[in-house]
Amino acid sequence: MDWDKLQRIDVRWIYVLVIVCLLVPMFWPLGLPITISENTRKVWEAVDKLPPGSVILVSHDTGPGNAPELNPMLSALAKQAFEKNCKIVGVAFFDQLVGPPMFQEYVGSVAEKMGKKYGVDWINLGFRLNATATMRQMCDDIHGAMLGVDWQNKPLSEFPIMNEVKSIKDDVDLIFVTTVGTPGYADWMTYVAEPLKKPLTGGASLTMYSGLQQYIRSGQLQGFLGGLRGAAEYEKLVGAPGKGCSGMDAQSLGHMMIITFLILGNIGYFASARKKSRA
Amino acid sequence: MTAEQWGAIAGSICIIMAWSYLFKESDVYYFAEHLFVGLTVARGLTYTFENQLKPLILKDIAEKGQWSLLIPVVIGLLIYCWFFKGLRWVARITMGFWIGYGAGYTLAFSPPVYLKQVFDTFTPFIKDGRFNFEGVLYFLVVITALMYFLFTVKKESGVLKYGSMFGRYALMVAFGSAYGSITMAYLSLVIGKLQVIFKDALHLVK
Image (cartoon, rainbow over all chains, first blue to last red; front, side, top):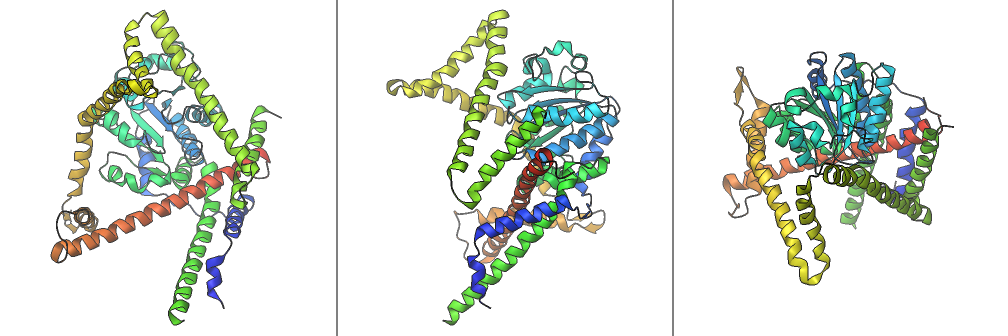
């Protein structure tokens, strides 16, 4: 066999095969097992140990590209938090067109199913520019930092939840950040979590996983949800399988396909190198 | 059909148009690209004006009379002096202010965060009566990776040579791990888009 040909496969065939591999389990789920990692369990525990009525500040810092990875985390968090009668306050610092509407959609749909009211049990404060300065101001004055309005410019004084939540320092019990880069954990840790000694947890795009190890290891970040996989594990833990779990079969099959192509590509590379050395 | 369904259909068409690039560069792809850029800029401008500038100008400055806010506004506007050749030095004042403010902020708040991570590098080699393999490996990787980045001394033999070699392999393992995570993340993104097409728009998947 001419193994050299493996080096000259039209890349478009690879795209087609990967897409097919991702599509098949969507139509015919394989039901591959999802094991819960220690990092995901730590996130669940961080929320679980909060007393009922606690306030969780959620910063949904995502753009359109990474939203499919991070959005399912919000649904699972909302389910776990609302079951414990915790309140959720949402902000966004990465993309004003994606963070606030996605937070509204994903937390809103869980809230509706669980009978939780906007402005009473949860609120969306929207996007603000200059993340670090806003974070610092939020430590002492959330109303001032968010210019006194929610994501649709309605005065915060209209919402009962905001009569209870005035500052991160006194009124927030846990910070949950979903991020794709900057602003991210480093900012929240440096300007809010460490100075105020507030617990920080959340999830991020898997592209950031290696770069976050030092935060997880030092305990500054209490657990971590890594991309769609982390979202699926968290959904399973809270007993609400959603978009995360439904994507895991597809992801596993996609990985198998990529590993197969990696092996074939390497066989082709070594075979052609051997051929050249013989010639 | 609801607005959400129309949105999912329009989104699906845009995804397919953008993905057409994988097959071949075409006008369909360029149309999707320009549509995306145009819509993002338009929405971004509107949002910024409505949510950031309008409340600041109309509410805080005009209504509440906080005229002192005009000072940072003026300092900020000076940055546009960059467009006038003779006045470029003025724009540097704003940049200098900005950089100084950023550096001050970072220096004031960062050390406690990073020091905690530095201390955590040096965990005991024997923990709870057992050999702490992870701690030892972590320590070795940090030290040898630092050795690799020592360029001011010769590393032709001895501890520095083998240490920096180990550090280089450790870095390569870290890069490989990062690359694997990135591949996994990109697959997640494709799955997300396929869900938009087949679940939200076509309702073919439950």
